[in-house]
Amino acid sequence: MNTQAEKGRHFRYLHDHGGAFVIPNPWDAGSARMLEGMGFEALATTSAGFANSLGKLDGQVTLFEKLDHCRALCDATSIPVSADFENGFADDPDTVATNILLLAETGVSGCSIEDYGKGHLYNFTLAVERIEAAVSAVRALDFPFILTARCENLLRGVNDMEDTIRRLAAYEAAGADVLYAPGLRSMDQVRQVLAEVSKPVNVLGTMMPDITLAEYEQAGVKRISLGGSLARHALSAAAGAAETLLGSGSLARVCERLSSQEPSSFWRKA
Image 1 (tube, rainbow, N blue to C red):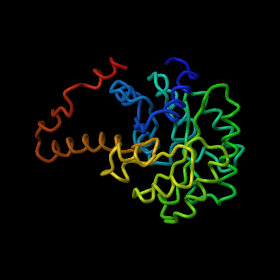
Image 2 (image 1 turned 180 degrees about the horizontal axis):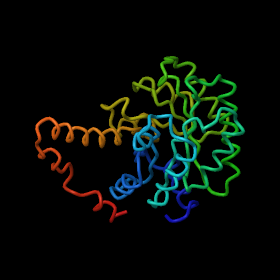
Image 3 (image 1 turned 180 degrees about the vertical axis):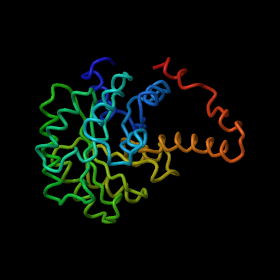
Image 4 (image 1 turned 120 degrees about the horizontal axis):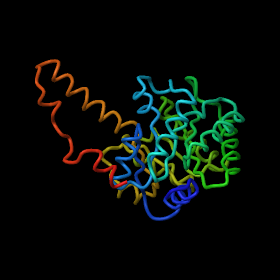
């Protein structure tokens, strides 16, 4: 897959055919190439992982830093990349739409838009209007683009399943291609969502680590993402090795190889 249109068609195919699939979250071009080389068919950026790679906290990345990051990942890989586009870097619907069009120019095949920004959830009416504007923007593109609408309730301490489902259903009616409530913490909650919507549903797999891909697929989930977990693994391994060196002076942990293959061996497969 070389063109954005080809990547977009394949991304659409993954959502429309077959069972559930995992869409892992690289934090830089190298990790993106590694994951592609390992055999994953699509990738999604991680806002937290990317922010941490810049020495920032999640939510502190600028729009243009995000655009440059997405461009770098798309240039480094030949598979679809979906952007964690946070709140669209705007509150008002028109600016969200404008920013999505800027994002589309980076080569991505989709993005997610959250209903949370500047420390609060958007009210229901504005949240729906923002998705409507985003849908209008992506439908004007001349290549397939998957828009994911995220309901942040459960992830932000608003433990209201009724409102979560109400929002997801409204985002579906507004035209979103994929629905995502990253705070779902049980299969009962997942099934509640699946019973009320018909578009593909994404779940955050790290919320339910004991659930297998087969169980998600059997329930009807289409897409499983990992958020910033892979980036945290990388940082944690590096920090642990550095702490050992500082504490004992031993180089043993620094010299451990966590894999029998170097990352570049996967890059050559990509």
